[in-house]
Amino acid sequence: MARFVLNRRSPLPPADCWERLTAWPRHGERVPFTRVGVARGTGREVGDLVLARTSLGPLGFDDPMEIVELVPPGPGRDGLCRLAKRGRPVRGGAVLRVRAAGGGSAVSWSEELRITGLPGFTDPFVASAARLVFGRVLDRLLEP
Image (cartoon, rainbow, N blue to C red; front, top):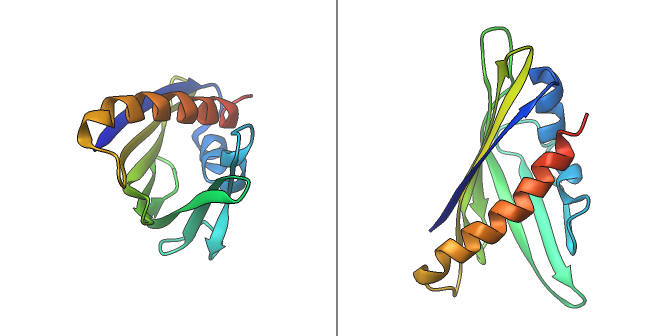
C-alpha cells in the first residue's frame, strides 16, 4: 500500500481551513483530468459519498470515498475527516485533520492507496506521485 502524509501551516483559523478542506469540488480545481463532487448527501455528514472522476477522453475511473468519520473543529477540538475509498481501481483511505496552531492552523492530510493491478514494488512511485498531486491540491485549498 502506498502511504504519504502532507503537513501544512496556514494563517487561516481552523474553521476556515475546515470549510476549504471539505469543499469537495474544489479538490478537482487545477488537477488535470479530474473532477470531484458529492455523489450522495451534502458532503458534510458521515455516510455521504464524495466522488472523484479521473478521465482522459473515453478512458477513466471513479474513486468513490465514503465519509466514515467527521468532526468539525471547535473550541478545544481538532477537526477530523476520515474517508474510506470504496471503488474497484483505488482502495484505501484518507484522513484530513485541522488544529489550531500559533494564531492559525496546522493541517495534515494522510492517505493510503492501493491501485488495482499495480504490484507492491510500485508503491514508492505511487506515493511520490500522489504526494505531488495532493500537495498541490492542499496548497491550492489553503491559499489565503
